[in-house]
Image 1: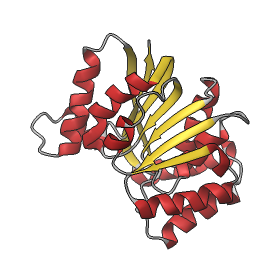
Image 2 (image 1 turned 90 degrees about the horizontal axis):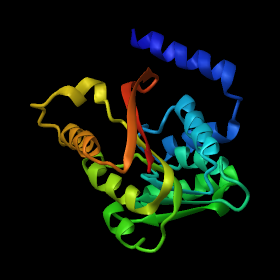
Image 3 (image 1 turned 30 degrees about the horizontal axis):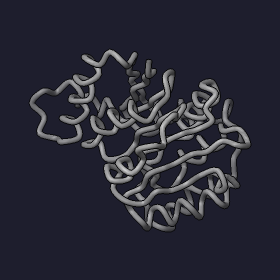
Image 4 (image 1 turned 60 degrees about the vertical axis):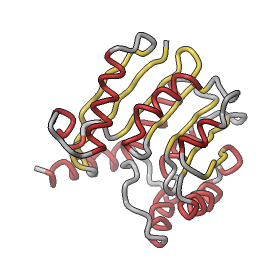
Length: 218
């Protein structure tokens, strides 16, 4: 079954995603530097690009940069005067991302803040009004990152949280996996949060069985 998931992703790519040597080079460079291969898939990257465009995003916040693959998709969705801030805990990852962003031609739109996301977000007291926020960092931090997204986003902002299904682990109340516990806490948090309209979508594909949460800040 998983082979068919990957085959469907390949079919989608062949028909709906243009050949993109730049992004292929980014993934190759990530491999050279031995970054973990946990980037979003090409189809998911295109989805982020389209969602950011449909939201009319001019200011984007990303929590979790890795090698900048999703960052590039999001930066491409910005207008000429758009701006993206991305947070990365690992300095080496950030250096690879900067190289990739510059090669992709979007480096002038992107600022990388290096350090724990909790700390970087705390420094952004006055940097509010983001139109689009993508959360894809340490899953244990998701409840906190969502609270910060609500603080930093404008009314009507789109918030995406990746990897929320975790091969079905989301529905395991007795799990001892801190990533699953935090994801369940995120859902409980949003269940009671009047400022958020949200849903989640399961996905299968080259990245396996997972899913993402999509929310609108009132």
